[in-house]
Length: 345
Ligand SMILES: Nc1ncnc2c1ncn2[C@@H]1O[C@H](COP(=O)(O)OP(=O)(O)OP(=O)(O)O)[C@@H](O)[C@H]1O
Ligand SMILES: [Mg+2]
Image (cartoon, rainbow, N blue to C red; front, side, top):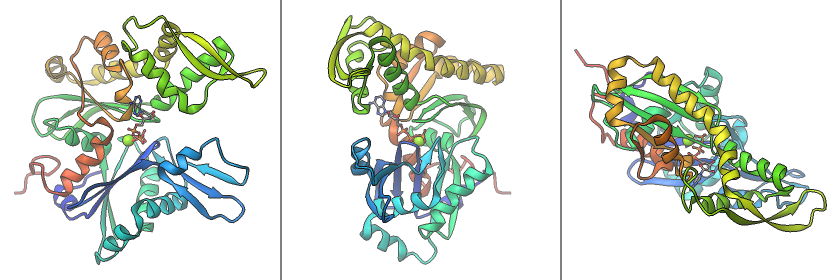
């Protein structure tokens, strides 16, 4: 993925197609779409019923003939046609018309650092389907680092951790490029899944998917590392009878359940540090880790990383939208040309 800033400056629109959310930045207008990557379709007629947050609200609540689909999975567009239909509806008629007026619409999109050619192709085809004549791909790690204001163009090391829904990417950046990177297939979804499985095993309780976040917030009282309230009242369904039941859940046990998937993330950080030249590791002791991505908001995750690595850990101001805002900054030409651009001779 070698794309120059000059090429990015010619783009009109920036898109971040994530497993959880789709975000679109339009040059001159800013972030115009930030909605769940979901679409509800009528399986009898094939008609699209809803997209975005409305479609997500339908999850688990639809009659047989309506299906809620997620066209992006694990950072890759898995259903190109559905992703195009979803994007068209998310953009809305007004914006679509404005974009159609551009004779040669150029789009930029971010893709995971280790995206294979097939995954890259799927992203490009999705955007070509909504009218883009040319698509530039940018590494999510670089876009997110620019978006949260890290001094990527400097010859000092910065460590970034992109905590997405499907995966966590950890990397050390210097001089505008990735020095070493690791992608761990554990993200917000895996953490939610660990909580749901724990309640099933320990309390024979089924938790509606919407209740996971309140439980995490209950833990937050004091984060996933510190001592919090000893138990929290949780409402769910009994696995055997299907009847509504409330149980007092031991918060320490839930914290342990969350820790299990997170050890893979800690291993990822260890691997990145081992692959990193010693001079850069020395810089990192001061600069620490910058967390971006929606799951960076998981209560207490930053403290857990601080305890495990001994490094300073920061959470970006708006961690969830860093990548698309970074792409947007590149489109607007707001970053210094040293980044990404080779010296012109
Ligand atoms: N306040 C919060 N606390 C805990 N987790 C959160 C919070 N807000 C969002 N998340 C989690 O963040 C994840 C979404 O993050 P993000 O928006 O970065 O995903 P994405 O970019 O669509 O995914 P990916 O980059 O993996 O394709 C979801 O799994 C969600 O559960
Ligand atoms: Mg993302």
